[in-house]
Length: 337
Image (cartoon, rainbow, N blue to C red; front, side, top):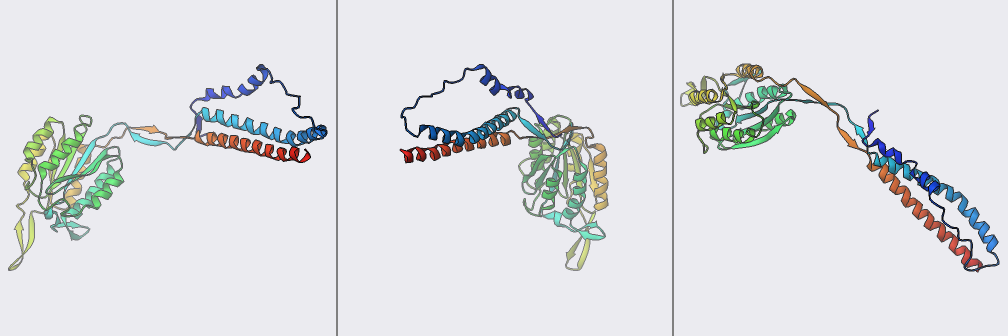
């Protein structure tokens, strides 16, 4: 049975109308007539015939309305299917660089060359799906940092927002310090020990109002652990005057990323290809395991409005029925007069 009553003691009021009828004195009947008519006896007999059946119906309707009111007062509730909720979990923010350099195609995905951002989307989506029990949020940063998705258990929404991220949406440059600062602002109100930021970039800090190392110091003070991931191949293929040439990838500031991780108790990872990204996220799953403890919650839906509405409807019909009966009797008396 998925229906229960919050206040079952309200059913004690069911016999109340019977007690009132038994204990209270009956109202005096008015047998006198204000106007005696020669056909009074015939009219009285007609009225008895007209009123006997409707009175029984009104009694049944009044009884039903009272029962429905008592049921509504007992607050019936429907218990939904059990929902498993994590007791504890991490508050994990994923900060993804979407600056212009993330469009560089030097990553291999499924045997095909893809852009860095496309590779990150593919691997990070799987990582998000595995984080059952954690609240996950998404920060996108370029010239500025934006909170795309606040901390939530809804992993599907976070994945959707990540897949819809586009190169240059937040500008062409890279504001690593601002991304860390925004993460601190969102995580500092959460329980200590569960504040985790995973920052993924392919370059160096070239924009923003706060230096990355200064932001890392503040993060350490606030108990935010930062894992940094450097993305991109060691060499990039560029088109020059003499055709396609391979040059070293010198844009990635690994020293700063290592320092950020070290200051906050995290780790720095280097992902040179899609496989490297997968390994990184597997290591993160081990370093920051998702919560396994759960509690069962059954959503409750209030149902009292239905019996209450039915009782009010029955009462309205009774009033309209009584009014209609009087209207039918009134022309009869006038006609015989």
